[in-house]
Length: 314
Image 1: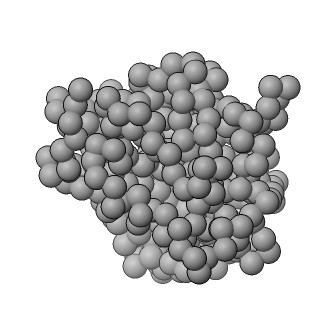
Image 2: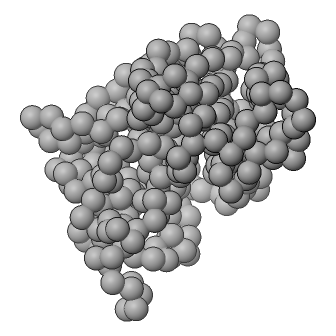
């Protein structure tokens, strides 16, 4: 660990947890509930919004890796140090949104919704494979915020939260299936005086779910099947219909905050439209490429499938 960094001031920690419950909440979604005494230290002040955690996934045949100090303390630069570990010992890290946090008589629990991907033979999706094979009692390591380490000077982004509407009265939420948990969590936290629209594109109508919100935001579900629509096409069409170009009536002004998360190419298309043609201020919006088609990993930084480092399968 770097001697120049005070570990007590770093907001993230590795939490050793186990799977308590598993529930399929649609043909492409699996909800896994994590529990463990260490989760009493997990959390952020106020609502979780789009709080993201990281899941440390062991490679096939490898034990669960650990991070940081024996008590889970992390430090600035831990991720770069983790990358220096050779495969297969290193394993994989993937990011997920916290769907819910609650206190129970048995201790605190965290719900995480996983998208179960259908992947080609030989092209792994480590997190999806892990979620599909997980059972009650399976051990896991998640990286997330430690409540006691967060101070008034800690930026929201350092804790895993990117939702900062900056006082906007209207919001535009858009995402594919990987963003459904984040958008659902955001909608639950919005007050009654917030209006706007949320568009969620998923593979199948059976993936639609009821999202509770006290706001005036309208929620629209879009399904690629049974029509076989191209990924992102329904989101693009819906947003173009709902949000007109600059120079027409009803254009969102400075009172509108956009939050868009999906496959990286889709996000690039939507960002160009909303920023360049509609005129939304990119500094008052959030655009996140959660993953990239044809790449393993997260967002635009993923590794092209077929070029990822080989991991010995046992």
